[in-house]
Length: 155
Image (cartoon, rainbow, N blue to C red):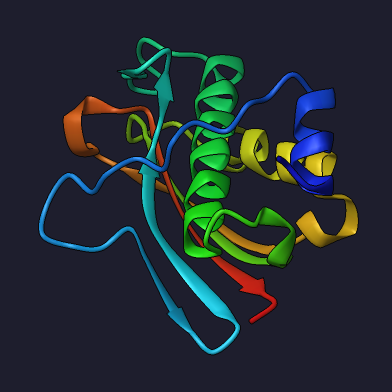
């Protein structure tokens, strides 16, 4: 049974997927005290990578949707880190968003807003966070967006 956060996600039409497995030699999350560090989550839709380069073959709206998918995967990882109890989440502390973009593309913040806006919509004030949004010449698997996060949880 889902708790309050999962009820809110359901109201938004979101069902958390199983936490994605790591693609290389790292762990998906590390907990230190009441802080959970979530490894970078790549943009996915319907079980497939969302690929593209902002400023070339993808617009800001599509990039923001890709970033939103990363935020959903971040929450899935937080749920796993909390032993399945997402209501242990206290707040989102920080996101670092990487945008696969051309050298002249400057709207990385608008792309990462897809994740930030979703987290605030889903979590209210607990979803407000500090953030970086940076360009990358390329990302793993050609994905459009990758986002890592830091979250505070109840022990």
